[in-house]
Image (cartoon, rainbow, N blue to C red; front, top):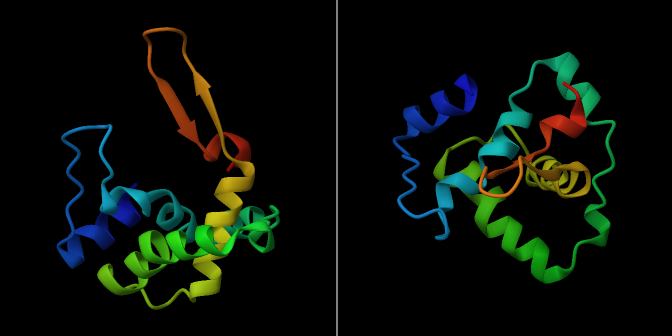
Length: 118
């Protein structure tokens, strides 16, 4: 959490969620950024996962480029990662994440870290 929080803070981008049913631009990139910021050993393990980027439709690629890739590189000013590296991380999350529920009325959790075992 600290790495991505530091990046958001340094660039003045605030994540404010007032309604969980609304789209929050700044929130979409957090998981991707969290994985990109991993220490080398953990990042190497994540990079072993399939990303299936080649299976994304052109529309999906465009949406992820606008909402995640460009957000990280332009708004958060993180040019150290290429567009391809960021898109592949998006693909890893899409291909390897899952959602689990604590039961009716107890919320749910969407997480890729459970499947990564980092």
